[in-house]
Image 1 (cartoon, rainbow, N blue to C red):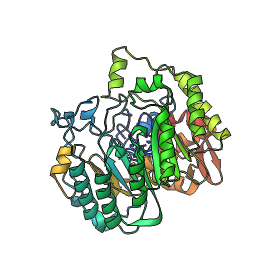
Image 2 (image 1 turned 180 degrees about the vertical axis):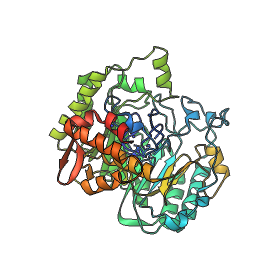
Image 3 (image 1 turned 135 degrees about the vertical axis):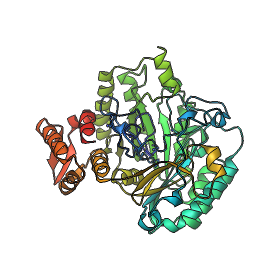
Image 4 (image 1 turned 60 degrees about the vertical axis):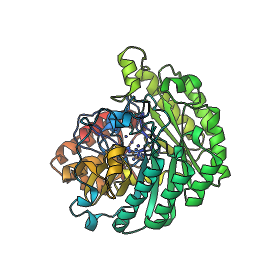
Length: 493
């Protein structure tokens, strides 16, 4: 299936709904905030979905935000890490030959100074790395596991959830399970995880709990198990309804299975459904994209994440481009697809609330909003990214290492946030939202760090040329600005 990144969810060739943005490697529904390196060292969460290449690589700046926890992704390279897996489809590659290439462990989360005192998480991201096939465009941490470790994974995850119980100051408002393919887990391991969440992870009465799903792995038994455990939202990775374009992406599902999966979700009593779509696929025409949108709308989801295909480093698709076997579509055509997307979904009654995300009234992904509004969340499972108590970190992106340690996860990519990073992230994340940033918050961010004058000049220039506007006491992108967001967001970072 991680956010113009991050968890997240709801991102550029990452999944949408999840969720982490990645500035330089910055990712929250999958859709895990990631992406190609940007000209910045500042990590941000990337959530599910990012804008197309022509619109903004900023979605690829820093940790990511996706609903994936990445999330933020989401912030820099969070759940996006684990690239040693990229392109490997056979089982066992997660264990093979790349030990030295990965990031160095930096202790475990319980060793982060002041975390136990300062953390105030509002949500949680859980990462399930298992897949039955590695899609050629995907650079999220996932792999085919031939060692039958689902039971060990679930037991280890349950223990990790238990030891974090002391960090919850209030009930969680959102939970998001991304991957990988969470619905590849069998009902037994799922019950272990659900029981741990019920016992040790306090949830608000109206908490949103999303699970990402591949349409081919959705069954009545599994959905009934998830619904009984409290899951109330499913994010289904469609990507396209055209078999030709699914083959290009190496997505192994029958387009007809999407409708079956949606029906299965609703039979289980789960009312909230999100669909993910990708545009800008090599060989795709504007007419193809319009038909994909029509098919998705016919299924009447409450939420749609639509993101432009990104050619991520270390993926099979990018290698095929390098070899001349695949030709990316023209950027002008991709821009036309985004504009058609804006008009078609507005006509269908969807409200755009973020660069790559649309929802019916009341159906916006609250987990994604947690990333974009710079709130805190805890991370569970290998490669999941967290943000709490003034720290950002990613759990080790290797299942074997994660299983061997515990109950606290070994972590990598640990970052403390100084004022300069807070300012950069505040603009990067806040301007992704259609509502923009409150004028008072703009002034607060401009006062942080050493870049206030530079940022103020960049904002003024964008207002003068029509990319930004002031409305209702807020600063936000215009429609034209969303198409040209990259330049401004880079200047602000």
